[in-house]
Image (tube, rainbow, N blue to C red; front, side):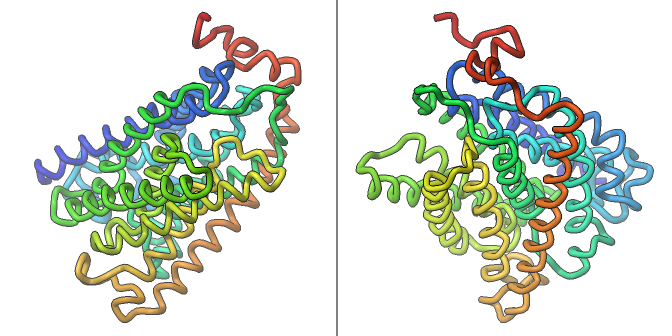
Length: 393
């Protein structure tokens, strides 16, 4: 047991937890004012749902057989060997909680609350925990294959981003009735993005599960990629619309954070700049594609998390270097096979997440009905479902 590592991981766990309120504000500012409370509730209540699911079954599924007993006070001999195993479980819980919360941006403003609850429970158990096991458990097949995912490019972002696309396709487009669809509160979204950026240091640097040089390296590359992607997104938006977008800056930062997540323990700051610059442009381009098709991914979950997560996972195979961790090398360090390994991990994650999410949505629709009524959607979910409003005037 190392007291310094334990103290850092307690802080890192809290940092990742604050990402849930950050996501709530980020998404909340992007929707219409009549649906802001319902959108915030998805992230806040989702944390509560997954916290219970994780303790009961999720953690054991993700890290079995080494997760039994799940919550010992002594360190594990396999995972995070210098901190209490219960702290490792708590840290992983926050990852499990935010992943289905990311998906909620795709069905914002039109999904029944009861259906959201059931979907979150099923998706956490059936999709998140198995993929986490594949990639991070000592006997996971992608772990054994050598797939690199330091903090969740495949497990968190690719899985949620592609699942969000499936949900958006199945649930259908929002009812507009002549309403303007612009974000109702830009400062709220920027504040949320700032909290996400802040919490992401725990997300990525905490994945070193120790207070050491690897954590410090992950910290600096996380910040660097977020900054680089912000520049690219704002620049691309300006070239496209001739306006310096504040929302674009917030979304660009998140895109960079998403893309660096799998690579954060394997690349140098130089690699982080390349990943961030590319991610900002790719994810912005993906948002333009959404405008051309009829899929209403309300808050661009696929464009940011799906595209950014997949790109980051593949870029890890190219830019990983032994200068960060001696045992892990990518294409630039003489190991071209790592790119193929990353591709296998990405394809497997996408295929499983897409099929499983399709089945879950169909099942939830049969049991509860996936979508609120047209009357309630026009009124707004805040009043129709929660009986409350965010603003009195």
